[in-house]
Amino acid sequence: MNIDDISAVLANTLYIVKNRRISVRRAFASTCKLMPCSSREVHREKLYELTRLFISSFYRVKYIAEKSGRRNMSNRYLARLFLYLYFMEHDLAFPNKLKKVVRRDFPDLEKNIAEIEAWAKLSYPKWFYEKLASLLSVNEAEQLLYSMNKRVQWVRINTLKIDLDKALKLLENEVEFSVDREIPFLLKVVKSRRPLRSLKLFKEGLIIPQDKASVLVVKALTPEPDMTIYDFAAAPGIKTSLIMQLTDNKARIVAVDSSPRRLESMKKLLRKYGVEVSRVKLTLADSREISLMKGADAALVDAPCSSSGAISKDPAIKIFLENDLIIHLMKRTQVDILYNALQHTDIAVYATCSLMPEEGEEVVIEVMNRGIEHKLIEPSINTSKGYSKYVVWNKVRRTFPHKDESEGFFIARFEK
Image 1 (cartoon, rainbow, N blue to C red):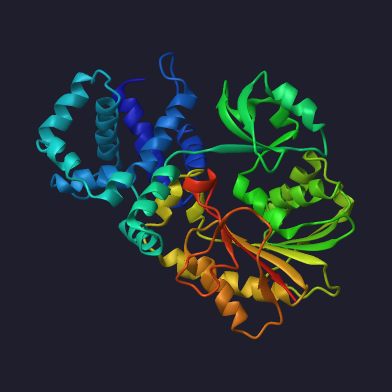
Image 2: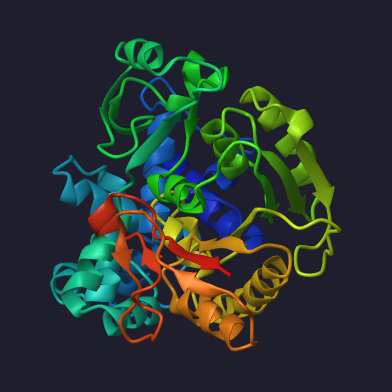
């Protein structure tokens, strides 16, 4: 593949991300159906990682182009500029054609790079940077955003299907990892010889990719055997499967989701993970409106959200967050789901994979102002408190990428 071929892959993936609003991996896969994505010199996985970095660098590259007087540049041109910057920063030899074009069109490139603003250097929407800086401090916000530009991978040992020690022994041959100090079935991947999804342990459901923050959400629920648990907005089912793992397949779960396709996928996933599916009732319904006959011992509300805390997993989210519209759209849905869930149980955990208080602290406050009988109880998990400008800050919890090496989650526990 030459530099034009690589630019085409990058540009087309960006086009798909922008227009179809799907993940980088899915957009890359779609692109690879249209054009070659590998050659003898360029392995497909390497090209995917480069494409992922391009999407993550979108705001930085766009800023540098605009500072150079180039507005409304094509995706192909942005891809070329990105590749030039990549070659420069990695001390690689420039292809002659790329070097000639970029130096001709960007005569002040070095100056514009040196004078880049912090939000653009980190490559995030300006409003997002400023929002986090107002909630934390400029320094801490920059640490957080910097850490989200690098992914930390976690995997859960699925003890429903394999003994913990046996899994660790088998993984040692494939993966360099460290065991979490507080959650012995959770591993941080330090290095892997090949993609985790290609491992036999992954294909057989013996290990499950699951971020530490996601695991902490379920730990905050403290599920026990024989509990009846309502799981609102349950698909894809990763947390449902963890509830069953923590209870040795002895909980009973009503898993609610509004998508038939997602529920069908969830059923297959639960079977793959060794979940006793006869104890999980998959229910097609809108979690904002469903009325269940019987009360539950506990409820999990892992609400749909902006996913602003999951940028490290999928940098396409940066592009979806071009403005804050999605934050406010999600908040209305989150309030309605949480309020409805609290009508069905004395205990509930509410969580979102979001760094924005509109989807966390503000949702909790609005629901409490509706006159519910529940009170906030500090979750028994070792993470940070919420944002201090909110009255509920010391009763709720947040995970932060720069502190917890995880995605950014909001977690609150309600009890009557």
